[in-house]
Image (cartoon, rainbow, N blue to C red):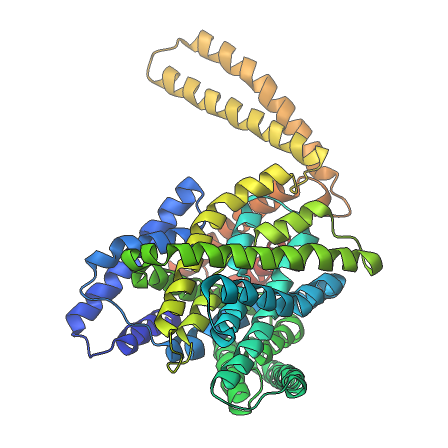
Length: 534
């Protein structure tokens, strides 16, 4: 309900003039239908969902009753906390600690270096002043993890690489926003020296972290009083996300850093200790849905707002900006990871290639572009520049990244996993043939003797595959991930959802009472949480 309310608010508030309710309803309907169609097509052709949304936005622009004018303040204050909090509440701090060195280096010095390199190329390549160049440089220094993680879900990669990508994206958002804010102050004519800028940077980041820690601990204490009330828990986390962000902005500290720390605290302290598996699963699903809807509208808005004609006019500048931020990423990833390898667990060279190639731009870059100061002389040109960069990044990099990851052979599978997949293929094929033989027999095409002979022949292969698969699954004694993990975890999750749906359906039909199924639902939800972690 919340995402649809946000969509309604955004569409109502973003227009320059009051829009008739009929036009508003038509616009919202077209956007929702377009997003649904994109989801179906993306799954069918394995296209990144956000890439499909941008392309759909370009397609449906002419179908809308009128063009939308996006209010940057609404997106910044309403959409941004949802995206940041959802990513933080699902992040395991223990995983971040295991990869603290590469994450902190990329999200700290890496952002500063990327901003400087990108801004320098844009200044001399496009003849920009330093302030606009630095603003765009800080915007394009941000990495968006949505498309990259979507690829990782399709192609199994080492969990540590996934952690580094998620952790960098989580923290570099806050750092980039602080840098962006300092440059905006400089543009507004405030006196900012190098020393005061460094002091302000650390005060804003540190203040945001302390604020987030305080609100996170406070929320964790309140969670204990809620017992097992999942709906109240959802309301509390929504209040924490938006309240922490607004309080941070009011105190002149980083609201994004505060929300990140608050989300990490709530997710790792409150949910595990104060909430039952059912409540945790409900809350996690709510935030996943909210972030999904927010991303849907943001990326759809990108396509809707981009004018293809203006994009063609700015194409040379867009291509130069892409070269600039890729060059910045190049001089950020490889030298800094070489430094990390000297005192921490080595980051393989192939992983570094993924970190470089996965430098895709997304929703936060768009939000910052829309929040560029109105007093900036060439603001509209800079907004179009960022729009074009994000669009091409999502389409070109988003579509090519899965191919690059496969070519780099980062996704290493164990011999046991490959053997399991071969046995599953044999089992699926044998079962399909047996099913067809039964259909032919029932239709009178095959006599009984021929049917039984052919069925027995395939039954031998099926029995052998089933026995071998049972042996593989039984050898997972210490850790499920060490055997046929992806396939078995997916199967386990599917069966648990079938079981849960059957119990809920029986309660809806009055066959069983909710009290009778409550204990079993708790067990199922706990297993589902473990399956999600796998």
